[in-house]
Length: 220
Ligand code: B16
Ligand code: MG
Image (cartoon, rainbow, N blue to C red; front, side):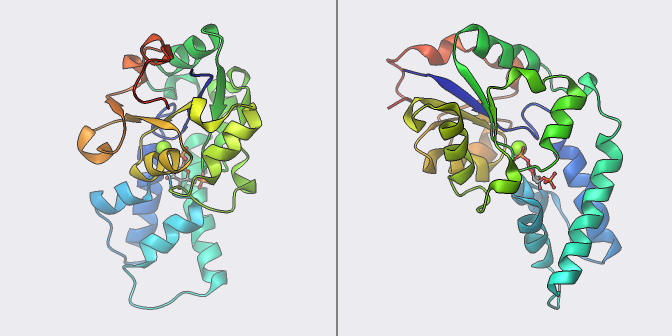
């Protein structure tokens, strides 16, 4: 039976996917690299340096490690400028209620965000106290779609992966959840999240009761 729900942050709980996207787009424009919607979709859920590597695929030259660090710092400055102003208003519709409903059902709540800015964001939005375990992205070696981050969340919660449900807005995140041996709920457009067991338009459509029954086909 289901024992825990592990949430992604950006694009699931917080309205930050557009902020990450805008910060990368700004950097790309400044250094003369192409950026379109498809590229933006590929960056979702991927960590900072991994995202930069994807962006630099469009460059005609190679970049030194030092240049890469400077560029990723620059993107993070653009991102931080925006999230410094965040408050509970930037919670996506239904997010607070969905997380609270998991706790109320007696299940554990985890966070598996690739973002090093996650603790700051949770504090700003006033929901840090709703989580039983938050993965420290700085301690993760391999980016989504690798299962490491969801496995670390399950381990931190003390729950077997097969008893966890992962909630994600990125294709890389759905792949990470599945590789961890968990069932996945996609948040967003079904076309971009075809691998998920179920896709919801947002957490406002999330009903924990739909997932609790041990008869559900998506839980092993
Ligand atoms: P940072 P998630 C991910 O967060 C974002 O989707 C991705 O776009 C971002 O590059 C990554 O965090 C790293 O974020 O630069 O703040 O460390 O979706 O896993 O919550
Ligand atoms: Mg995300």
